Length: 218
Image 1: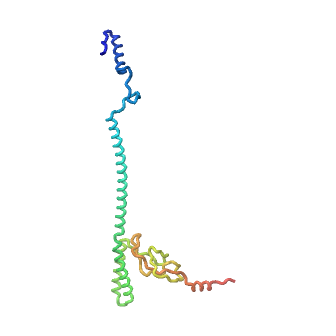
Image 2 (image 1 turned 180 degrees about the horizontal axis):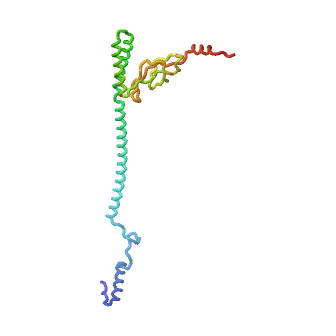
Image 3 (image 1 turned 90 degrees about the horizontal axis):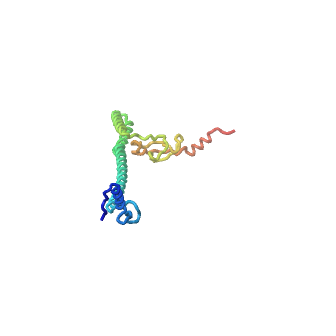
């Protein structure tokens, strides 16, 4: 039971101050303590601790989802780039099968021109074959299918197919001596390799004769 408040003003103020100190000190005259014995603010309640743990878990989940989204975006961009590159390559070489099918026709027209050129009475036929040959060449050129320049060039297994090798005094060794069948290239891809005869260099007898025919030393 609390004591009655005095009627004097000064005594009443002192009484109020003492009562406030007593309430602050607790029922036994000492400040309240935390359960672990440390002084200060009381620990958070069970609900606050659960909410903090839930917030931390949500933050970890958000960080993980953000990382997965970044990886997915990178994979999608890589797929888009690869698909665009493959599509461009398909469009670039779309006429490759057609060019391969047309090349035997070009070869037959060339043979017809060669045969007609030997017949004096096939003047009109020869002119017709030449016009067809010109149209075929123009059609291939419009699609970037061009003949491979092989005559006299160094032998390149990427675009030349050697069918024989003969000695030659005029053509350096490992160079194309003669083109047997014309090769073609579509952009940077070989449609058909050129069939060629490769020079083996000067014959042994020719080289010995050239050395003997040289100026003598006095």
